[in-house]
Length: 350
Ligand code: DAH
Image (tube, rainbow, N blue to C red; front, side, top):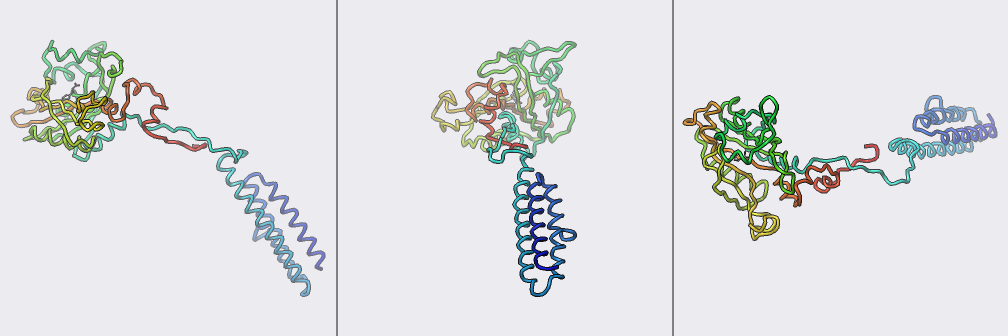
């Protein structure tokens, strides 16, 4: 092969290779063109390199130089196309790569769920497990076993929907205390989140269906000291509250009973709109489990004692996030959810 033949063969391969690599519109076509021209086994450049052997000694430097040029050109064209087509494959073929990325809000946890999960986390560390019970409940579990005397005024706050064929929508998570005690032997430490129902107007601070979290601890020798120390520790962890106070209260299923307040974290106790000027935020009801409740659940109140609490995570979410109206929690407006949960965004193709 003389030099002229070699040079025109090299020019042909370079021209055809350029055309093939430029025509490839996806990564697979580009790879096929690469194998055909740059491939180690049967690529056209490979055979051009082979034919260097039959070029005369004095023509070899010029032929070799031309071969190197053709190969360098095709190789860099290939690499460049590969980058472009690879990017196009990621965002979908034929996209305009100069457009800004399209992003969508993927959703996130509801503020009440965030509060419940954080509370669960704290109590789990204290050895509590999470239990659940039915929302359609019997009158006995909802009231009778919890020591509500028939026609007692305490029932007024617990009006609810009664179901055909008996039963009702539970007005609190407390019936799950009894169900748990019937099912498992002490020592018991459970946290019971769930939805409850009341005949309440749907206004800025009430909803007819809302979440509660119940806590229950029953064993031999449990005292009010356990109640206070555990709930104080919880308040410290959850609210960062340096001070709490317990006010005497009444619930049929606890004796004694207490409402627990934490010092307002916004004003530090001096009084502000968040705490309605009192310096305190009421967070839960609690007390020592009434002996009648232990008895109803089949436990000997002479042997066992316990403490319990119930709280409303929506109320807590409202004060924590400064939400002005409880109804917002039920609106399913993703703009509000995003404000609380922060931006959780996905790229164009998820
Ligand atoms: N069940 C009560 C309610 O819904 C809340 C409550 C208060 C639960 C005191 C308790 C407790 O376990 O000890 O109003």
